[in-house]
Length: 132
Image (tube, rainbow, N blue to C red):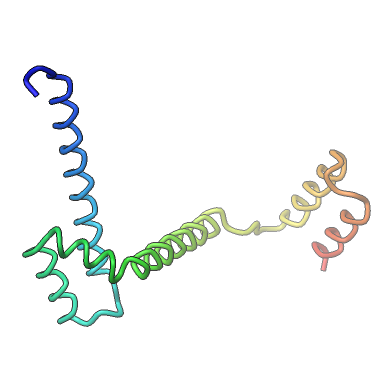
């Protein structure tokens, strides 16, 4: 490899990035162990000891044994975060209140009808819903 220094740099970079990816996977698994509510304390401790004492084998076995449920927990957490964010948006924006709220909404409906976004039937239906 002394004849090709670029190849040596390539191999060094490859091993470095593989090491970084492995560290990301290791920390992802450790956080997943603590996030899982189905595991009891002893099972969490066992997985954690296994992953720390035999890192490569522990990570490989964890991904094989619990990879699917790991993905399900990630999706569940993403949905909960999105729902919390949407609730925060609704809470922050608030619903229109005050005496002019119906008039403001009606003005918006008229503007939409004038732009052609609403047909006459849709406008009448929305107006009836607003006024009731």
